[in-house]
Length: 369
Image 1 (cartoon, rainbow, N blue to C red):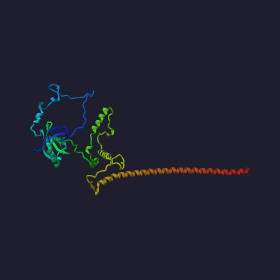
Image 2: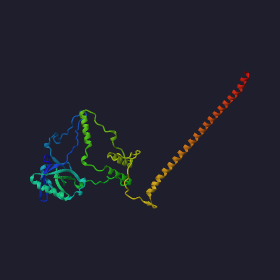
Image 3: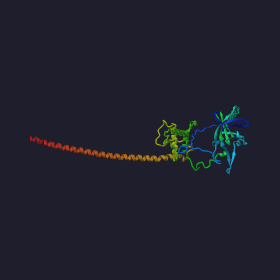
Image 4: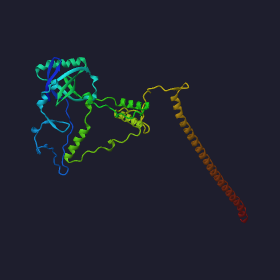
């Protein structure tokens, strides 16, 4: 940590114990920053600082700070003025209390810092405070001054280092009035069951496995443009947006997609149809009993009765159609048989006449002989 530049040097005031420390940023930003350019020619746009009194550009060394009064009067304030303020937190992180960690509202959490022991004499009291925080399982609430104003902080142990989170003052937290949705909205138990199923399916995640997809996409875009190749496009199927019209359908689809992504459906039975198959969790409330039987059973029976009637009607219609087809086939067969029989009878009659004529002709031939 010694290679990291400190942003503030001072001491931790722990009762009568003083611990010299250095304040170091505990976080760093990996966001990609852009520059402003002139669209016509690509020239860089820069801001220049001008003095209104002299109408000329000034350098950083010529710039100070001032407080603007209500009437617009500027009152100059120097760093020396701030350093001589009669407050103990000007160069000291003053611990004022020790409280359980759950007393701190996450909404108050601000910038995080590491506190580094400044020099060998600071190692012993630094370690003492660190171990005391570990054993008490509490956090220290402190006040300190940084960048021209007094701030609130929370000290806790991270590995073997004391970390400090800047906290917003309680009056800096806005009340969540008029932010919640209409109180008249109700949620059904079935919808809650599906939400619970989705939460269970998604499960937990290691925060260290998460990364900034947007930053990576911007880096790919910049690389593509710098290389003169076509920028990657977002697949049409991955675009999101629009209104959720059917909450139940959206929940069911989400549960199914989460299960498929976790491989829970592999090797199982194939799903029939397009509807998601979701196992309903046990109901939060027992069904009411009506007349000694559960009303749920009555509803189920009522849903099944129309289906049975429809099936019976369909089967009767199929039987009627089959009977009509069978009768028509029988009539056609009988007619064909009668026609065939008639042809055979006619053929026999013709053959009989031919034979009789032949018998009559034979005696005549003998007489002639």
